[in-house]
Length: 203
Image (cartoon, rainbow, N blue to C red; front, top):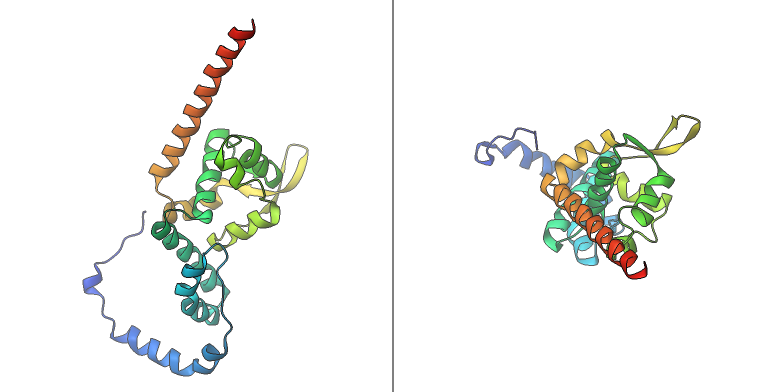
């Protein structure tokens, strides 16, 4: 985190409380008639908890609803021990780091998640049903969208590593990225050692 924050004890809430009360009064009809909002990626309990805030954020504008959803996913991650959104951010960031690429086409990114560095074990199963649309929906709350670009003779849509920087700094500790990389390197080492033993058995 690079953002500077003032101590909470110095915050004067009088103006904020006055504005919140006025907002609730002005928007009470719209709030009362709003249908329940289920945040994508949240379980039922978390969705129930954040629903009133989703209603208010939606009235404030699409940008605020997206910001709230990203925050809800992160908070649910800490409360539940895991979050599909923040885990996906971490794993994609790992792919960028291990590949050394700055831009990856969506189809290639999906192959890396399903058949590449995470090909073995529960992680591959987690991403087995992921497609381009679902991937974009999971990343959208973090302000990350696929863009069109060209790499040599190939043109298509994909993701740029620097677009993940802000979300990574906010929601995924660097220690988690390093731990995942070490896990994958150890996995590769064990499989290489196993292959050597198998070759010996059959030679």
